[in-house]
Image (tube, rainbow, N blue to C red; front, top):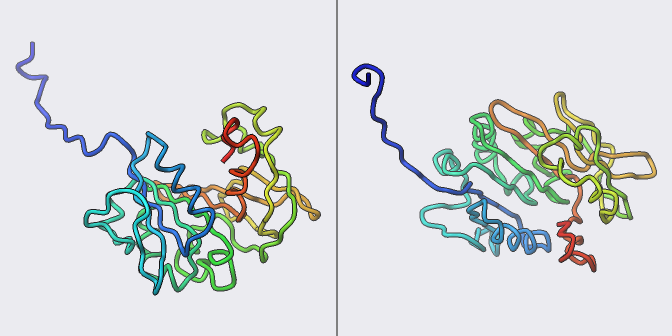
Length: 235
C-alpha cells in the first residue's frame, strides 16, 4: 500500500569527492611536497593557494573559479576540509580567523600545519583563532633528532589506527615546539621525545560540530627525502 507511505525527493550530487582548501604562507618545502601529495589523493578535490610577492595569493593546484584565499564565510561553506599553512597573525587577519571558527563550529575540519611564523611570537595565537587551538602555549622551535610515537589516544584514533608496526620504524622529526600545554578537551595523538620528555607533536580536539588538528613540527617534509620514502610512503 503506497498511497500514504511514500514520497518523492530530489537529490543533487554536488561533488563525489571531499573538497579541500589549502592556504599557505610564503613558499617552503612543506608546501611543495604537500601540494604534490594532495593532487595524488583520489578522495579529495584540492584547491591550493600560496602567498607570493607583495602578499598576493597564487593558485598552485586545482581550479580556482570564483574562489580566492579570502576565506569568506560563503567560500568556506564550499569546502569540507581546510589546511592552514605557515601564516602569522597579520597574514591571517582577524576576519579570516573569525570565519574559520564558524567553519569549524558548523562541522568543518581544520588542519593547522603551522611553522615558525604561525607558532611564533606574532603567530595565529594572537588572532581570534586562539579560541579553538588545541594547544594553549608553546616555546620557540628547537631543532635536533626527535623520535616520534603514537600515544594511547593516537593508537585508537581513526587517522592512525592502521598498521601499528609502521610506527616502530618511522623517521624522527628534526624540529619541535616544546613546552606545549594542551587545551581543555584536546588529545595528543603523536608525541616527539625530547630531553625534557615527550612533547605533543600532533594534537586534535573537537569544537562545535567540527574538529581541529594542529602539527607542532616544521620538518615532516624531510620524510620525503628518506631512502625508503617511495616504499613506505611515510609522508
